[in-house]
Amino acid sequence: MSQAEQTPTTDPTPTHPTPTHPTTATHRRLWTLGLFRSELRVTLRRWRTLALLGVLAVLPVLIGIAVKIETSDGGSAGPGEGGGSGEGPAFFGQITNNGLFLVFAALAATLPFFLPMAVGVIAGDGIAGEASAGTLRYLLVAPAGRTRLLLAKYASTLVFCVIATVTVAASALATGALLFPLGDLTTISGTQISFSEALLRALLIALAVAASLVGLAALGVFVSTLTNSGIAAMATTVGLLITVQIIGSIPQLDAVHPYLFSQHWLSFADLLRDPVHYDDLIANLRLQGLYAAVFGAAAWARFTTKDISA
Image (tube, rainbow, N blue to C red; front, side):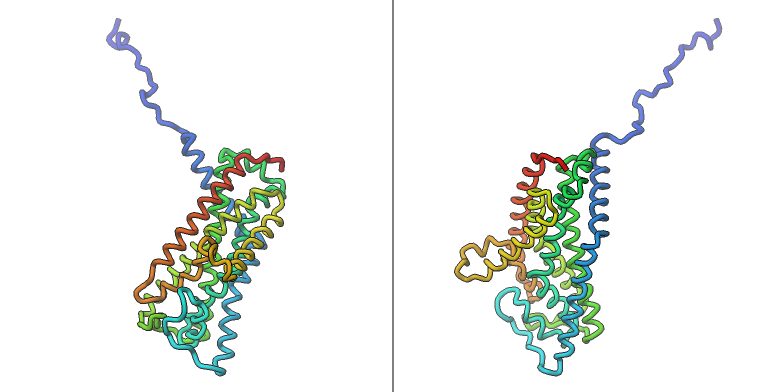
């Protein structure tokens, strides 16, 4: 027998095979990311979303034009400390001196109602809209399941919060640059900062305003899990927003004011102080986080046990 015939035949199969398919965990992560991207794409393509963003973009233009028309009727207010933290109207008197103040004035004007209303509509339509359209049970057949679908809905709503706020800020900045001079900015503490630093603070203010809507977004998603009617969920969320605003304006109910999600909404003005005051900003983030945790957990408990028939 030859030497070649005496050599044993080796198994061509490798000891540690290389996987050709992603693991189940990786597959679910990829599917969840795809679900989030799909939800965000669908949300931003809806006509109601585009209409809401269009209205938010027009409001700073109207404010700028109104201030420009009335410029000759009165001078601008001085840059004093103003009233309490977040006194939004103090920004309007400075618009004619520096168009960058239109960004702060527009955010202060839209935050009490227009911005949260837009977020309430998107959040309320998240789950209930799918149920009313008859597509919810088909989404739940996918590997992501109820928890990941709920997270994707909430995450897309949070992204809309940022997009809506940036839309207002960008429109106000463009309008302010066209109608008024730009330059170094006088803070509400009376000191001056460079234009580049003022732009950075404007960006931080926009992010602070977007963060102020986190609690309302969680509340809207929770309401959306309670009904199969998208219109009812949107109306309820906006109704709760109006109710909270009314309660916040009644002095006799000041005992509950610290627990309202809108309590520290105008704290973003503290970013225009020199030095910056962080107390109300941190309190706002904590309050929004509390609302997100409570109503997020409530939405999860409701949605994961809900009988889906549509």
